Image 1 (tube, one colour):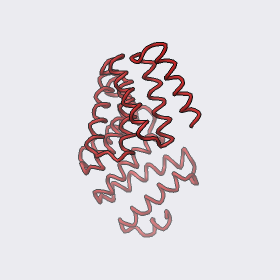
Image 2 (cartoon, one colour):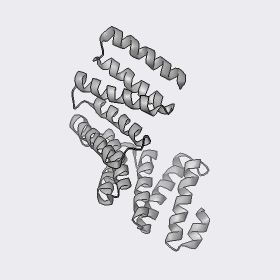
Image 3 (spheres, helix red, strand yellow):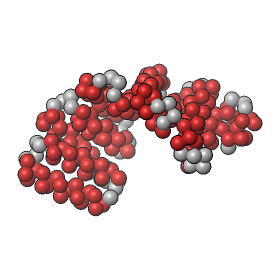
Image 4 (cartoon, helix red, strand yellow):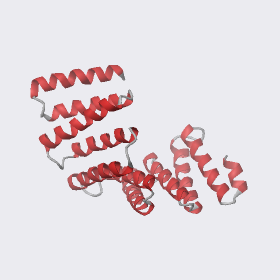
Length: 219
């Protein structure tokens, strides 16, 4: 990853010298560098470069371009790891969602990505009703795009299961974890780490439902 970061830094310097600081190719180098720095846990540097990418693409491509939404989404990820408050993250994800709906249409799978991100942060804030609406819509979009048993849909089912757990709705939680487990067993195999983890989560929910035999078989 360090080598990739160095390569993106060189690319950034070359593009700035060749095209000027406001060229969209500079924005591409900025966001790629920011992602590499994120993997290296250089969060302040990553944030700075994602912020610059947002501003570059706003100027060069326009406020409503999908690249702007992508950079805002990357920035939200960095800010989340930096410990930003949910309200800040919600604002960023709402903006990315607005741009993607306007530029890509309401049924594009990247709209589902923004909805899933937004729903996750809303759940953290405790706004369960809006979180459920966002996650339900994301799930519907991804079922339409990737299919019912895909790992993308399973990831939403896990978020929905966690949301139901927060509300102590154990029947709904069981339903969502059952769906996620079936998807992971099919796609990844019964012994994959993600499958084992979802199986344990389902078992803990079954305990809450008083279904002891089912829980024993899962945990």
